[in-house]
Length: 374
Image (cartoon, rainbow, N blue to C red; front, side, top):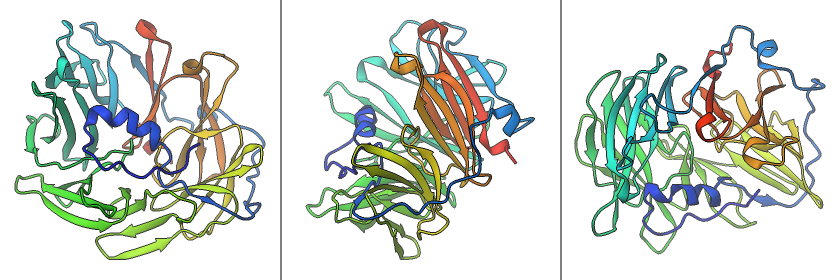
């Protein structure tokens, strides 16, 4: 695990998100001195399978390639069977943004020239509109980012604005948000002093507005921000930027703390490395042990749907991309579920967890609708 990195003060196009995620995989991770042996241990003695834990909740799957040949990479799920993702055009000249339905039919939404290193990201929905960011380098080699949206289920994609600022994404479900008919995202301030700009544009069209928050922040569940500052003296903080409230998260011990608006993930570090992972509320209450030192979080966001943590552990295979064991920790039940073995890519958005198995032409995507679990 790495400590929190300060958000870089330069323009960040979507093509650079992969590098940014590697540096910022643990948003707001803070090292604090003291004693941390105070977590409750759940009664469960070992992981169970998803069919036993959640009877009747289907685990779906679909092939990794589209019918016209190229590999499909899901980026977002509108529902457990409808994926938004990318795939090259069959001739390799462009990157396509497509919607893949449960029956395998595909609708192309956008395409950008492959030579411009195109990227699509920041997907978010309020159930009525889907919004995303897209970037591509022009003939001048300058990468430009635009915000786009479409009315669900079958509206035409439309550009909202090219006035995006220095967009910063953390590979979080909350990198972009829709609230009250408005799309929000974060920008790194060009000022000398650390500041984050919360930018917004109406989905119905209009000018971009900006709210300035002192310090380095990342968006979490609207209207909360979570601190993204570095340094051992920095305590993790939450800020409700609309209602002008702020909370400092209490933590003691040698801990790496990552917070959302409802739960915090606490990596307890010993002299020999990670010792265990706990969960607690941002005010320090309701703390419990979640996993041992061999497990690590698989996604950036803490407490999906305010209830689930996605974890991985190295399996017996020596090939890193296919050796992960995928677990889901059910916070409400204090129960660990062993979801799948030999897992490659893992992601979760909009109440759906998905992962890949296999490689190259044998890739298969699997889905688990967390939102269907009662």
